Each structure stands twice: as C-alpha cells, then as structure tokens.
Image 1: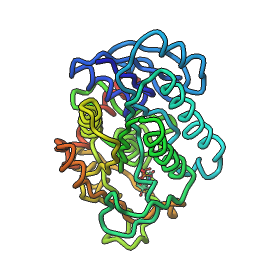
Image 2: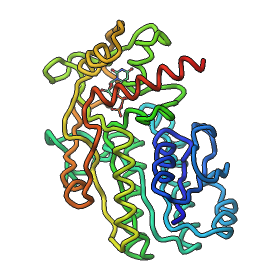
Image 3: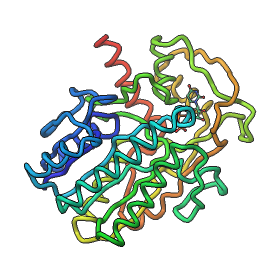
Image 4: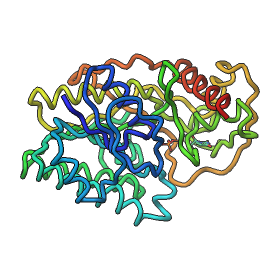
Length: 326
Ligand code: UDP
C-alpha cells in the first residue's frame, strides 16, 4: 500500500509518516518545507513540492500510484487568519482544490483530511459531537469547513471518498522521543509552557483568567498526537475496505484548563514555571471539549495516551532533546 502524505514534514504529518512506516506502508511525503523539517521525515520517500503546483502534482501522480492521500498541510493560526485571510483561503482552500482536482485526474479516490474543532464556532454544548452546528467564527475555521463541504460535493459527483478528522487540541510528542512539535514561531500552550519550564522562555503568558470556568482560564481537550495517528490509520482502513465518506471529532472528552496544564507541567517537570497574566486572546471560546463517541463506535478508536500527565511527559522529553541539540 502506497500512501501520499502531504505535509509529512510538519508536526502531525511527521508522526503519521513514522506511524505508517511502522505499519509496513510505503509512504511518500510531499512538503514545501515552509513550516516543516526535512529531518522530521523518518520513513519513505521525500518530495519537496507544493500543492499549488499543478504540473508538479501531475508529474508526481504520473510517476507512481497512490492508494490514498492524507492532507496535513495547512496554515493553522486563528489570529493570523483574521488579519491575513487571503493567505488562508489561498493555501487551505484553493490549493486543496488544486490537489483534489489533480487526484481526480489521476483516479485517486481516497482522501483523509485534517479538519478542526474550529469549524464549530462558539460551543453550544459541554461536549461537541458531529451534530453540533457548524458556524466557524474565524477564517481558519471557515477554510476547513469549506473544504469539508467541497469533499461532500466531490463524493456525490465524482465518487471521491474522504474522511474528515476534526482535531481538538493536538499535543504531545512521539513516545519514543524521535519527533515533537517544532513550530516557529510557537503559539501553542503546551510547548510554550515547557519552554518556560526549560528556561528557553522567561515565562508563560496566560490569556485571560476571567472566563466562566472553575479557575477562570480556558478549557481545552488535549489529544495526543499518536492517538490522532491511530485515528488516521483506522480511517484509512475504513476507506480501503470500501467504507463511505465520514467525519469524526477527535478528542478525549475531558477538558483541562490552562491553569491545570501549567500545574501538571510543574509536577511532571519538577521545574518552576513563571506565569504572567494577560488579556483574553481574540476568538478564544471558554471551553472546547470533544464528544468522540462516533470515532470510538464506528472506527474502533481507542486513545492510548489520554492522561494529561503522559502527554506532557512526552512533550517534555522532546523539549529536553531540543535543548540538548541547541
Ligand atoms: N494559551 C495561553 N497562552 C499561550 C498560548 C495559549 O494562555 O501562550 C491558551 C489559549 O488562550 C487557549 C489554550 O491556551 O485557551 C490553548 O491554546 P492553543 O493556542 O494551544 O490552541 P487553540 O485552542 O488555540 O487551538
């Protein structure tokens, strides 16, 4: 089985490439290295290229057959999507259309798409399941929802089968310590907290402590990167065995506040973590927690690393490795 992983040099993609390698798959990574790292691709072939380049995609698809495509390459910063929406619509929507049309011409009809909890907008329930209204409140979420809608239409018209996986807060690192989060600039909570623990940053800034939550800080559903990989694997099996297009919310169903993340990181690392408090960050809902019942029931998904301690331990191992490498 030959899988094309778009964005396989990025955070989630690189873990997926390793996971697929362990399953015995042949893998090709296509990545433009705008945010990814060549040395994070631990398995298979690597092609440096961009999904905006139709001729490049056609050449890649002429040269070999792919059984399925996994698409991880997108811009992911909510705040930036508000100030620079053109970048987001171009990259996340238009370039993805380009990819889908090249796939159509090459008769590749299985697609796994990295979607997001941001497609739901303001939560209207404690846990968000797939029936929750989809009303994104920022361009990032809109680009992802638009692709989901395109995929539904492409299935109806062209028979392209897809699985959309809506991640809540992807976090953690390879349990074997070979891979981890390497965004620059880093904006995500857990790596920033751990940079404050290691001394790479002077402190962690908490955005808002006046939310309507028990300790006043935002609650999120942190899901381990390897558990996301296992969900992709199950989604792939479903498509390969003739399953239809579907969408799944992926989270642990338990929320942790920013303060709880910091307290857990203090315990796991044994380090001081200086904290500063700042105003709320625009566009942050108080609480975002998944109901992943459907993924568990229909895909047989069984997250292995649901404990926040484990997730932070793995991310901390990676932070220490990065620090040693300099
Ligand atoms: N957060 C924070 N300080 C930071 C980064 C994030 O307080 O330096 C908060 C943020 O407001 C949100 C939570 O941590 O409530 C998770 O944010 P992150 O950017 O990691 O993921 P998001 O929820 O935006 O996908």
